[in-house]
Amino acid sequence: MALDFLAGCVGGAAGVLVGHPFDTVKVRLQVQSVEKPLYRGTYHCFQSIIKHESAFGLYKGIGSPMMGLTFINALVFGVQGNAIRALGKDTPLNQFLAGSAAGAIQCVICCPMELAKTRMQLQGTGEYNLKSKNYKNSLDCLLKIYQKEGLRGINRGMVSTFLRETPSFGFYFLTYDSLTRYLGCEVEDSYIIPKLLLAGGMSGIVSWLSTYPVDVIKSRLQADGVRGVVQYNGILDCVRKSYREEGWRVFTRGLTSTLLRAFPVNAATFATVTVFLMYMRSEKNLRECEAGPAIQQPSSL
Image (cartoon, rainbow, N blue to C red):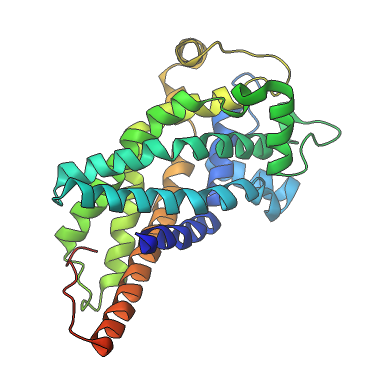
């Protein structure tokens, strides 16, 4: 159990470093004004951020996910591993259920973390531009939101986060398990790393495609009120107003940058987690062999 948590922690840190620039682009595209759009698309958004804010602009708000996602991945992989063991049988359905359980539990941390990340990513841009910065860092952002809005403000977007995370993590682990079995990812395989990277990357893409429209709504709800004016009264109101003003395409806004991010981030995360577990378990087996009779390890990674 401890190995599951530790592996998730290491994998989470690797994923954040690879994917945060894409996430910054995704959020800015999702919440920009339809009347006065700042960016024409994913590539233009990348160009504009680097031109006006330097490459460091792509890493705005990284403190929150680096602290949060590292722990979240530890929680997700730990809960998923324990749920599979509790369910007793490693089947596709149980992989989905275990992943969904892990996704639901981590919402408690994920929602405030993404709120701070979103506010930090929008700070100093376009319609959110201010002469002075509101927030010094992610922690300062959460403290100021708490002082102004209380616990309800800190948990803004919790329901939409839950609706996004629960099924998406189910598909996430189900896809990874199915692909690693199909590709034949065995410890002795000389091509195991490329196979793990492919399986992890595709798992991320399937996971995001399964619930992306909900993520757009979540981002809009968490960005709402930054300028002092609250536009939405809840999830359904946000869906209605967004669709009425921008049509169905609003629910795919930022999807390109999200999918570009999803593959490398989840390839890095899953490959790191799996290789870490393989290495640690082989070390454990070696010590047990030296100490006494060998203990049979389960074949599942």
